[in-house]
Length: 313
Image (cartoon, rainbow, N blue to C red; front, top):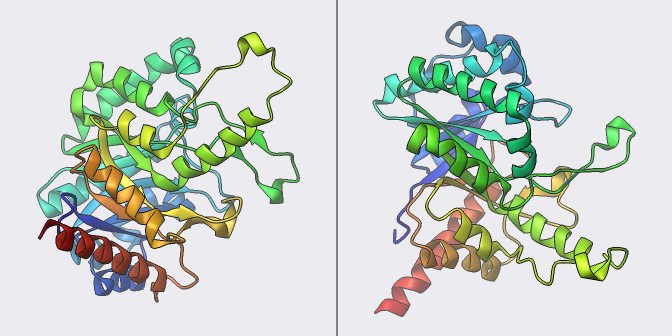
């Protein structure tokens, strides 16, 4: 392979799903926790098949997704006094670090703007105090913050879509602020699906912004994926490699790349900015015990590598 980074596969805590990802081929596993971990996480050794912790190298643990599509975002977790849900996530990560003899990354979303992050003084103090505790208690666990999309919509809630604040440079700015306190134990996750969706939505929004006073309209804001790679260049610990179709929601989110050319563009940026972090192939499947889309993306990556090898000869 000519990619500097390893390829990880995302899988839930289900034995059959992990076995399928191993069969497909991967360098490591990123656990995709769901709301069952909220219930059983305190005793995960008793409540889950222990084979899932030892059968393939575990590299990343993603905080849980709820069945209603909500996430345990940074700003939601660390405003509470009870931090047992995230403590269980860090505990699982440390357990896997002990099993495999290397550091394990905990991934968490954040939809705060950098402006709000600086304004919410009590939240920041609680966050720093809590991370001090977790990093001390779990010495082999690091944390990375993942970029989000600018709009959320939950049709089963019966409510209108709502805008998120932390959509572009916010994640990178927050990570840089936290690194002043915790060094490289905090980094970013660049999700290509989220970045590409942000590029689409924000360009459409600004293009229709004739209601803004012209003297206050930004002359140019570059939301392109190239800018994402540039911003995260020195702080990125992991890339979630995926695409989206149509509006990007529900089944259209985290899909395999629509064209080889689009994937080539992403991987070319990976090389352009000298990334060497791993890439998780975070791909949606109709059946996670038969990962046809994961296999397809692996073949596309191999095709990109073959083209580069031919060009260098």
